[in-house]
Length: 312
Length: 244
Image (spheres, one colour):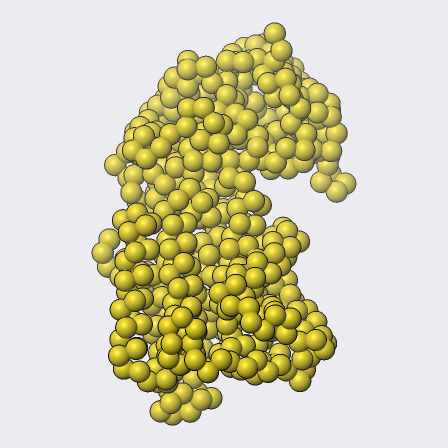
C-alpha cells in the first residue's frame, strides 16, 4: 500500500473514532482517548529516533514541554491564535532544538547520547522554571474557550480531533520512512554506523533528520497540553510519566514498525486509564514499569515482533 | 597517466605508537595489487585511513587525482572507494538482500547517473548474492550465516557500491581451497570489468595467483614493492616473515 492510500485509511479510522465519540457524547471518553492518542504520537516520535536509528532519547519531556510552553507564550502574546498554528510553531521550536542538540550530541554513541538528552531535559526544565513570563515555578493558566471552534460541542472534542489529525500525520510519516531509502539508512545506522558510512550512508545528516522529525512531533504533541490541562506548571509539563510512557510504549509494542507504538500506546495507555479510574491514579505509573520489564526480558522485539516471528 | 590512488608520505599515530610511517604507494587504474605484512603491520590501518574510517596525521591521499583529505567516509565511498571489513560487520536486522540495498541506495544512486529504482534494485541484489553463492539465502538474516558466508556477504556489499577501487580485506580467511578459487575468480571478473583491486591477504597462494604487484608492510613501513616473484625473494621481506 502506498503512502496516500495508507493516510486515507488512517483518516477513515480516525473519522470513525471521532464519529463514535460524538455519538456517545461523553466528555470523559474524549479526555481519556486524547491521552492515548497523544501517547501514540509521542511513542511514534520517539521511535523515529530510538527505534529506527537506535539512538535512545531520554529527553522526551524537553521537546514535549517546549511545545507546550511555546503555546503558553503564544497564548500570552496573541490569545486568539488558532491552536493548529500553535502546534506548528511548537513543532518548529522543538524541531530546531532537536537539530541543535542533535548536532552537538550525535557524535556520542549509545548510553552517552542518552545521558546528554537527559541533561537536555534538566536544562530546559530549569530554564522554564526560572522564566517568569511563562509563569515560572508558579505555572500558567490558559483559559479554554467553552465551545469548540468549527465543529461545535465541547472544547475537548476539538483537542481530540487535532490530536487525531497529528496522529495520522505522524503515523503516515513513520510508515513512509520505513518504506523509503531513509528507512534503510536509519536501519543501517542502528545496526552498524561504521559499516553504514562505508556503504555511503551520510550518517550525521540522517541522524539530524531523525532528531528533527522526532523532536518536532514531540513538540507538536505537547502544544495542545496547556489547553488540555488549563493550568500548566513545570512539574506537570516535565512529568517523568511522559518520558517513561513514550519509551515504554514503543518497546512494548515493538520498535521495528509504525504499528508498535500504536499497539503499545493503546494497550498501556488504555490499561493505565482503566486502572486510574478503577484502582488508583498512582498505580497507573507502575503499569508501564512492570510491563516494560516483562517485555524487555521476555519479548525484546515487542508485541509486533512476537507476531512477526510466528509468521516467519 | 595519473595513478588512480596516490599515497604520499602517509603517517598515522595512535598516542605514542606509530602505526604508519611515510607510506608512499601509487596504484594504477585497473591494477591488481597485493598488500601483505605480518599481523599488526598496519595493513588495516592503511585501509582505514584511505577509506576515511580513520584520519591520517601526515601526508596526503589522492584518489582519481583529487585529494581525499577532509572527506567523510561516505563521501569517499560515493567517490568510488569500497572496502570489505576484515571482521564482518553486516547490518544485523536486515536481510542479506537488504544489506546490499544500502550501498545501492546510498552510494550508487547518490552518484546521480545510472541510479537504480524498484525492481532493478531487487534484481541487482539477487545477482550480487548469486555471484558470491548466497542467492538462496537472500531473505535470511546475517545471524543465520556462517563466518565464511559472512565474509562473502562483506565482499558482495562492497561490490554493490560499484567501486572504482575495491579493498578486499582478508575476505578469504577460513575459506576452503575450492572457495578461495571461487573468490579469486570473482575478483578477476571484477578486475576484468575495470575495477582496481587491492587484496589484503595472508593466504599466499591467493595473493601470488592474483596480484600483478605486491607491496609489503612491516611495522608501519613499506619495505618492498614490486613484482610478486621478486618481492617474496627479497631478503628484507624474508627476514620480516621468518626472522634472522
